[in-house]
Picture 1 (spheres, rainbow, N blue to C red):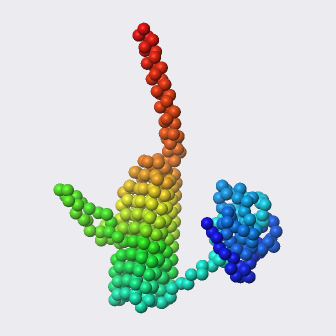
Picture 2: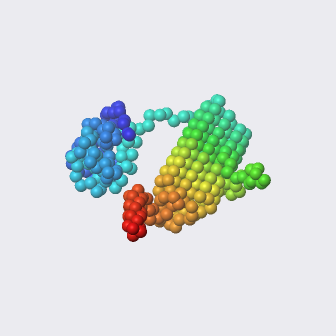
Picture 3: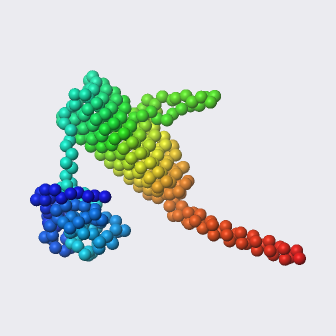
Length: 355
């Protein structure tokens, strides 16, 4: 839900003509319509700009009190003035940033309670908040922010323009690219889950590899990304990871992939680019997931998947087959009744024959 109070109206006032000049698209209706705020379509009031990105919510255009709506190109008309765009979500996001900028102040400087080790290289305009711990031989590049309570281990490198939120742990020999965002409570570089059982006793296998996070990655809260046993665990550029995700040792995640909350990827799995792993999905270790694969929510992947496939269910199978199987499962109560009736009919016929 997006609800933003209309503060500083002169600063926020925009006509639809001015908005189109910023986000592109075309106006249907009065281009001189003035908006003074931005809001979700259900909560919007007169004077607000809102948007519809999903066709399921088109009916809300007849109910909203908003003064104007950003829509997709598919919408031809509406009861309010509209701006038809290629991507309503992106267009609306631009207007949110413009009309309701984040008022939180960015931290500056190094807090006196931060603990900085030896031979630490700190770039320009780096901010390190209270009680952060930076171990020896760490490198932090320009404009990066480390919030309160962050821990950075020995020989770790963090790139430019990164945002690391409170209580993140980045362990030793980890490499973080540029423009990476890491949300609170995440642990990067924890030991991979490696044990060898001898005579009923579990012996730890040392995990001496690293983790590499490339540019423009965003990592949600309470995510764990384990270090590799020998080489590296790799998250490639542009990937977005939701909260509460587990990525095991030696996993490789391809460019611009999406990994949704409570998903788990077992060790030494390789994922291609543009893969979508939906909520609570799980992947067994040592398999390969091709480019552009979609793995539906709660799917259990037990073998490799070729590129451009969509799978669901457990064990995961092509979505079209999984839907048919699910339809059959839903019919089991009726099938049980029919079989029961047939059994009773057979018994009745046997009884009549015996007479």
